[in-house]
Image (cartoon, rainbow, N blue to C red):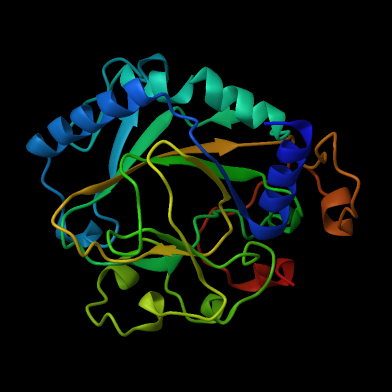
Length: 280
């Protein structure tokens, strides 16, 4: 990326809540991951409760895996996680767009929608709505993701509501807890959690494109209307040293952020409740 292109990506992430950097993943790694993920699904049975997500498999980097921790089919270490997390092109792209103090959870989550799989409900993944961290105009928790095949509406591409990471949307008053029993138990696909909204946009991607998104953004996915599996690999990262702004930040800093005590502890939960005050 040129400096101008990188600055545009940074601005898009801040304002819209997501940005895309094309062609980051090396094609050879992409081929390797397709074969590897297919092998995983040869031995994993996806529980019914995560049918809307498609799967929920956690692959830890060996360097972060506690020896003696029991493994199972849905949680295990694998060196391939480090290959994904440590991609030089990915690290360079994140550096170019100013993602400072980037810290990975050291986990790759496989979210794979099988052929003819159902849609993914609208949700957001932020866990700190009780904290002033929810009020930062820059991201503090992000995911880095890759699809292993090209995505379109037909095979279940991503959907987002741009700006919903900082602005209140009607879904905020409707949605059950993200990934909780209530939303997983919904059987009626006409429920608003699966609805279409005029502000929503499709985000079709090419295999190997890197999508970076703020944990607070409302996102979902269309159903897979093809016979082929559509696999997503996602890794969570913290970014920036709260309450300090990015070195490049020249905008306003909310008072609640300026006055925040970084040592304070807050309940972690997906629910919004009173922290709706942090969404304008």
